[in-house]
Length: 367
Ligand SMILES: *Cc1c(COP(=O)(O)O)cnc(C)c1O
Image 1 (cartoon, rainbow, N blue to C red):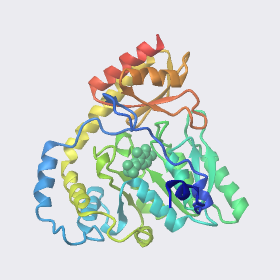
Image 2: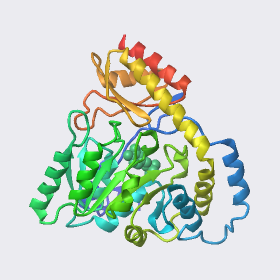
Image 3: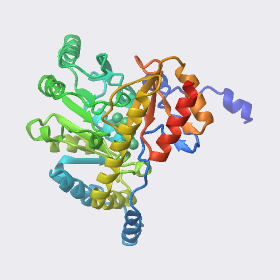
Image 4: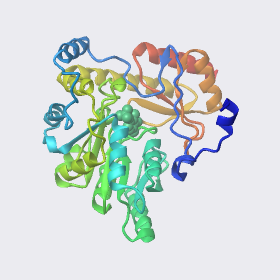
């Protein structure tokens, strides 16, 4: 067969829910100042790498890893004061979300989220053939209790049951703020199924929904090592959930999904909580400084409880500003394509030097 024959030969299409999707796309461009993916600006502590290397020496690499990842889950359970049975770990919190959707979503079931929010919630829902119903954030980008009630009622009207999953993201990516206690209460009380709160940025915020878990078995809290734990390259996230939810998530998980290296590294980094807390404190302090500097420029910004800020140039086109920054080797995220975020860019809080480089370049772009 020639190459031409091979490419002209008809090939089966993937199923419709996959075809309809452009996929998740965040450009990976090599720059000096990367403030586009909400990663930690600092690596984990030096001693972390030494300990991981030492512990890897004891791993029997010819054997499959611990399928239940018990030691890692034990360490996570201790750090949250919960039981091992309440921890579901996976390859990044995106895989946690996927497992939850595979187990609780799917044909005939609905997931609700409030736009604009983290794109992967609706994306993974639709590739798992879960019906997506989007509610709407207010002008302050928060979800009101009324909107939660309205959206759940709208789904119930349609299918008689209501959503299997209500997603909240607190602090919300890409807009930055945590949801109010009233909204969390409304979701926990009104949702007939699971309430999945994505707390990828939870440690940057003044409060978490974790303490509500004991009273609400339908609450699933999702965390990741990618942001606060400075380990985006490791691909590790987890849910803290009712043991029945954890069991169901494991049922749709491939055997031995967490490799031995990740199990060791995840467990070891948890011993560095004090260092991580000071890294977080530095980011939060820098966030205040960047917000104050943005307030002096011709941009509108939204208050943030996370490690990023969205802002909108008042008199310049967002994509022109994005390009101008890139020419100065500063990469931010263009979120202007999100519904209702027309004209907005999102900047991750970096080191003091990176933030200065960003602020300088931005001042230049707006001049
Ligand atoms: C970055 C981010 C994640 C992280 O995904 P990982 O797969 O854990 O790297 C999850 N949720 C939100 C809202 C995020 O912004």
